[in-house]
Image 1 (spheres, one colour):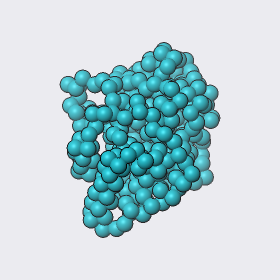
Image 2: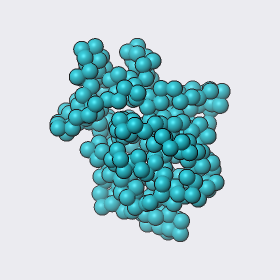
Image 3: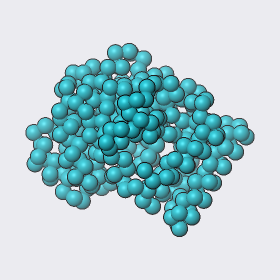
Image 4: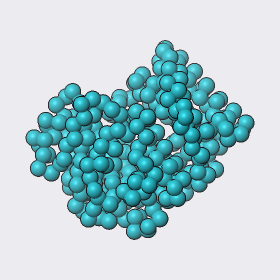
Length: 316
């Protein structure tokens, strides 16, 4: 599979991040076709990429910010590689990143693979894919664990994080592209659920390492981030029928959402969290899927989820 890899990098402003990311993607140990999709940046990102990297990178310039999923879908359509690798513009890839991500696809049952992202300084893990509880709350696996002391594994792996992911093109064609109703956040989880529902497996690729600056594109916990994230959360709750999974799961989900909304309202002194959730719930009208049981990590209990959620609200 290593002779047919498309690397898609969606970007929106933050030209400085992209200028750090691209050289690392172009230094891979296997040939890759790099496709940058610009989401209507206003900082001359397109001009700079074409000037500095035009000999090695294809650029798709969207006229406006259409969201992460729409940008990725445009990049996927522009390529034809058997594998599609996604890299966030705030990730710096190690040289063997793409080669290691491609390795699990020797198994024809694998439709997606998760890379291993480290925090700046490389002493701690940022994420090794996504794990989800019964309410579809998604968490970065091994977040904050020491590196390289931690022995990572694929147990409980629901799917890859969109910042360091690989997909079999045939699997994407079967399950469908990223859901563009999700403007940003949780698109990778939604796609992982659809791929699993179609029978595809997710593999871990611990050798596919890179450094993630962490939320640098949106800014750390901006109010826009809170609102957009809230919309995506409510959209998934309704689309995947979380509240129909029985009284225990429904009560769990509603309690968690109430807690998050209350916390964000107090901290932010606005209704961004509630406003986003209301918009996302309305947007999901008519979209209904069934959660594939294999995606749920039974080890993620309510107590564990509360600890994980609290950790995401604390500054790093």
